[in-house]
Image (cartoon, rainbow, N blue to C red; front, side, top):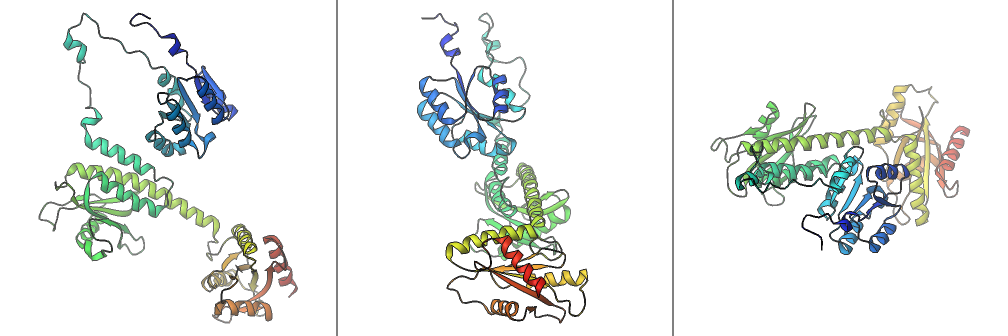
Length: 452
């Protein structure tokens, strides 16, 4: 039996199991953790764990995509005392945080955070107190810590937990970020009643997005006091905390803004514990609203860029690449249902002379406005347009659809129903009789349009 304070050799020499398929990343991790026993798959690693209880398991997050929770659960069943660590890319940090909540030991973010691994795996020994020192000196530091422990600062803990919850919305769409982000902030402040009002950039009006503390279906008029205070916060671009008596109930209104632009106003007018809203609530709400504003701004930009990438700026119709992708998917669905797909290629009718760029753009917008229900349009050249549709096998075609098909097949000229200038030469190709894929159908329609 070893003497007290001796070093347990059997414990210190336990191996560290590493799961990493990427050769470059594996080499880096093996340099950081020389004692690691590397495996290219989670199954191999689990077999190694079954043979010998390791000191820790390190997993490259992307190599177990979709089964990270299963790895943690399996390890906790086999060796609950063995920590499982994940190495993650920055964009995977929210998912890694959820894994820690599910039982993982910790995660390390590339490229620099992984250098914490040696300190986590082999923490430096703590210095024991001198036996000759007085008890007071053993138990108390020479100077007080600069800040209180987190458990003694509940407002900081609430702020941290809520900020983590907000960061989990990083991959959501802009509307979801506003709605669910508001719910997170309401929860952080123990709000019993509140609402989020979005700011319409065109009309500057405030529209109700979500609310708590009222019966389902409550209308905008239920939050008139909040709307009035929100208008003031919107005007000053600063949080407003009203005093008791100034409004029917004390109100906290916080603008949700980023880059000098306000997207919404968060309003809270009551707490579950009945206490009054105070400056601490205002500060917490302001900080969390700032986090939500940053996420919303990024999501809105992504959505705008995605739309710009798929749509023609002048007409709002799909671009050529997006149309080909859409048509390919449409053909795949139609083939499974034994249904036809119709492709109509259009260009300005030049019988009265060539159309200028302004007229062509106007034609494109007219096509977008007059598409039959369920049809899609695209601009595939400076003066060429395509509309595609797949009528359902047993559905009665709509009048506008019938008129478009009849005009395109019979006379080869489509009248959009506007001025006389809104007439287009047309050619038709149909799946499956004219081709089995998008490019063939488009080429067939182009050939027929040129020959007309």
